[in-house]
Length: 288
Image 1: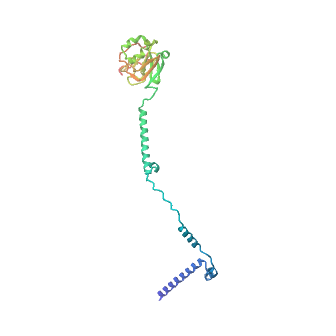
Image 2: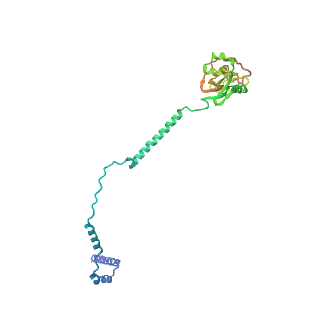
Image 3: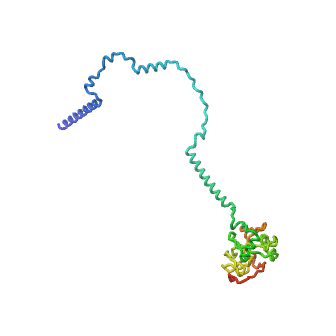
């Protein structure tokens, strides 16, 4: 019995809820019972001759347009098909990336090639390894005398000394033509002496060879090799005389080619016969 009573109560509750919902819907519409009861057509307005409605007027106007004889306009002739211009269409994203990649690769290779060419291209250097214009012969000989017989030019890593005109004939029988150009310049071109350009390195182990003012020789401080004023070996372990550069005298101007090194004369060469003119700065180191 209790179950039946519960079912009946549930049905009644549902009915009450449905009724309340309908009442809320009617209230939401804003019309009360009295308003709906009074909302009836006015006989006076219904019977009055109010004319055609708006819809009827629109329908009549549409019918009149359809019945009018409109002029027939011929359609334009068909134009022939023309393929679109690729330039006008533009570049796709794929084409853009492909062309960018190729362009960057080309730019990189061009830079690498330019760097290689610049590295291999002969440069217009003016220091060691190039031809150096030392100066006028008269001025050079005067400068050698002022510096006690030895003139050092650091830009060419060389010593320049005078070659006596009295030893030229003996030199012609000993030295090559490229060496004789400067040595015979005094006799051939009328200067007080010729000149010789000596490489500063000792041919023994490459030490820089200074001059000795007291002996008027070149004396190596490393192992005691000794050379006279024109670079001919006089003592020590060096295998030959000092190496020298090719020179030229054109119009009285001395030019030294520091890119052309000529090996020094063999042991025993002494064209000038110069002996030590005073105490040696470094004692001879024979046997080293």
